Amino acid sequence: MKLNSMKITPYLYILPFFILFLIFGVYPIGYSAYISFFKWGNTGAVQFMGLRNYSRFFGAERDPLFWISLKNTLILLVTGSLLQHLISLPLAIFLNRQFVRGRDFFKTVYFLPYITSAVSVAIIFQQLYNPTGSGPLNFIVNNLGFEPIQWLRDPVAIKASISIILNWRFIGYYTIIYMAGLQGIPPELYEAARIDGASEFSQHLRVTVPLMIPIIFFSVSMSLIFGMQLFAEPYMLCGDYRQFGGVQNSGLTTTLLFMTLGFRMARFGRAAAVSWLMFFVILILTFTNKYISDRLDYTKE
Image 1: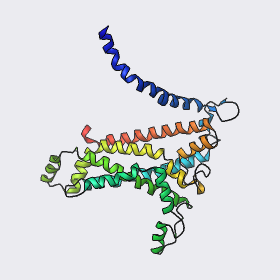
Image 2: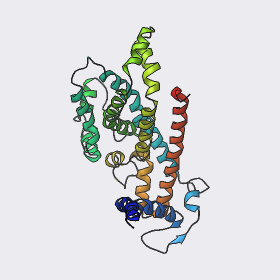
Image 3: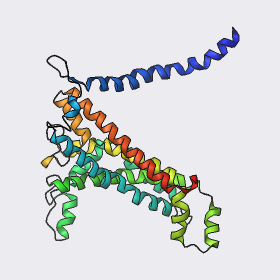
Image 4: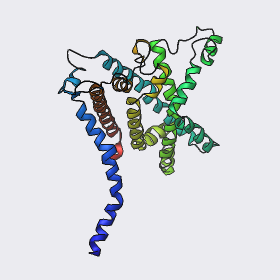
């Protein structure tokens, strides 16, 4: 009897977690999949639609807003999320060098944008992007002899505005992650490379990058997820749910679209279908990232 109690006790300790996970994790996921097959609103009868909520995005009744939002999301994913890694990794390598003083200070400063509320950041950047000459950014542009940029009124400038915020927020975050990864590379490998006559660039190309592949895979995967779920910045900059992403829907992301469908238009079934399509896009992008990472990781051979 005592032996049985000892076997059961560990499971009782972890049972509350699994109960909460089932209620707040698994159940909402399953329920969203369920309502994606229905016409479901605040009023009127709930009507079974089959796959029609999904076919709206591909068939004759194709919703152009979905494809505009997907295109915008992918553009911002490249310019605002994946671009960060081309800056973060070299920056981490530089900060990891022994002669750089005050690295702890830089770590703190770089991490601050990430822990700052996205809404607060967007409000501050709204002031920076003021289209008149009184805005800080356009004040600089004016003094350089150029016309003020319509940061939040021009379709191209809107995407650039959002990308700038994303890079500002996350470059420091990924720099810290890469610096942590660099700590795990044995210095003897660099010393051996130097003895073999490798230049500093070759050392990083042949030693640092291959050994950092697992960290790069993790960071890029996180960027893919964050990028595909982009919401707060375009919501704040482009005029909440009413504007569909501002001028020519140029700031409309997929997450902003399904939030608009759900919370403004009360089309919960279509909103759930959009969320599941996003899930499959993220899954495809993550597997692609995994495939590329495996091809580049020679340590697995």
